[in-house]
Length: 212
Image (cartoon, rainbow, N blue to C red):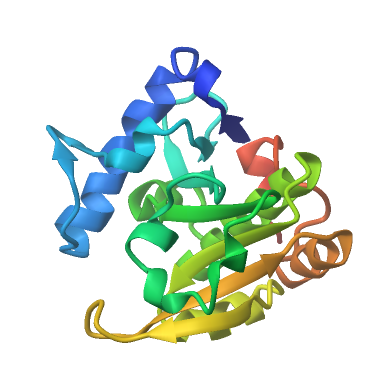
């Protein structure tokens, strides 16, 4: 199932967050070799202290985490503004109703075991769809995220079609793009169709998300 974890729900979902921070270390530090902040077996940074909302996809028994994402309002400090400011065309993306999505990652091992027919692209698509559904429910009108150029085609295939509003070099081997994701019923329906999901994914049981 997908759940959102607000700042006042940290203790209630400590087991899920334990898995999430461990997964982030495995993905961003161990696999991708990013220069990230480590706390023991966790990947955590300054933005995790600012009251973000976490989106988590896990099995009903809360044993296996499949994917997670961090969401922060752009009215406060964000990675986008503090680190990737050069990818922004102007300051208009820091506004009420616009949130930043970062630290999206999947647990390829858990997915392969429990959903052998699902590839990583579809898993990321389902994670993105859940985030957009969460935004729709909570009055967020746009999500902004940074990504490498090749991800534009991946997002387009999943029906998200983010609007690329900026791009900059100097952050690694690839340029970094800044994209704005529209939050609307139209986008949600388009993504559900592209991902073969027959209804909402946010709050649904994980095993209900697999299309034939």
